[in-house]
Image (cartoon, rainbow, N blue to C red; front, side, top):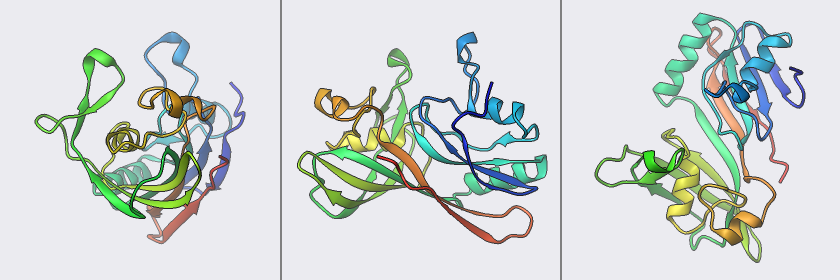
Length: 211
């Protein structure tokens, strides 16, 4: 499969940073028709040593970092696990949050009857924390920056829905007006900061959203 629209942001002997397009899985799905994904395209088109470190949702675009050898993979995975990686997302949400910035601290868990949805659950949910900042306001929506402290599946989407500001174009969590307000999910991983696995320099990558 062709490399297609996967933009290479940075590359060296240890890491590969790319801009994932929308409607592309990070890793292969279980179904036979879900084999096309970012890691497969990279491995088949010049980067056979690429190793997945973290994931973005199918609809979400933006920065992903991949390791190029097992040692770099272990170190980057440790940084994610120890929350040393700083992530920033750009999003469009329905309405306007009342404050200029804040945090959402709501526990989450998988909702098996409604796969692949996640829900807020104060009893069985796992700890989840998101910081947010309002960037621009428009008549029906706002541009915001989202900074997850934890990395739960669908965390940003569920947290914004929980406070009454679902993300535009979200097929799982947005109400009808918010869903139809954009042709795709308006969530983009625009900032990523890691420590290089070998030279230990702090690297800060940026990739502006196109919405």
